[in-house]
Length: 280
Image 1 (cartoon, one colour):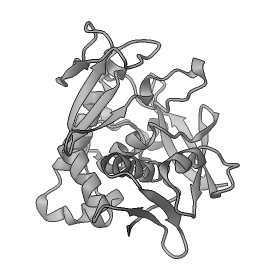
Image 2 (image 1 turned 60 degrees about the vertical axis):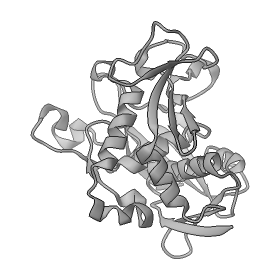
Image 3 (image 1 turned 45 degrees about the vertical axis):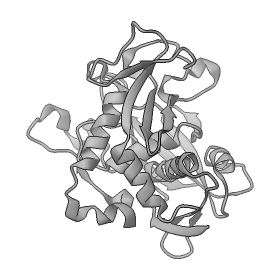
């Protein structure tokens, strides 16, 4: 097994979740993956796997995969140009709407990654970490497509940075999942809403948001209240099944450091955005 590392900002919860997303993708593609955070000098995330270049494999997968919405009944379809597959074994959300249909990412020899968490219900004790909404019901699948297109818009000559420092890759981005605090804002604090000014290009970090959405499928930060969450990072190489639990439980023995992220309401619809994160 080989070890590869990438820079990570531990105070950016989107990047920490994206590290979890990298592990999830490699686990689906190759299995036998382990990861850890190393903060001895510059903070990095280290991946140990059977892949020759795991970051390239992950980026190639999310760039090239096909995106489909998945519906348990054939009368609910994505409304924004995304193909909809009908599978009765997919659990619907409590409020079945096209905007929160689960999606599948299919690529590399038919490998499939399912993302369903935005349809989960708090009534079942689950926090779906769905910070986005509104936009005339703009769907999860369409947001994922926008992230993929934003990533694909990066010029070829800049793409070497995908593999060396993937979380630094920025591009114009109209929609996302509000999982990257470098793009998010509170209109009150900012003084205006960029959404009201069509001549303003909003720069986002599509790879972080895309991978963070994957990372949330099997692990969640610990909810303190609607506007505060905690997450843990670990220092030993661990497989996904242990890393998932540690990320969301500040009391796990492997969680060497814990962080708190703060959110704010960003619009009348009640959408939330990550404003900052601090250790402790």
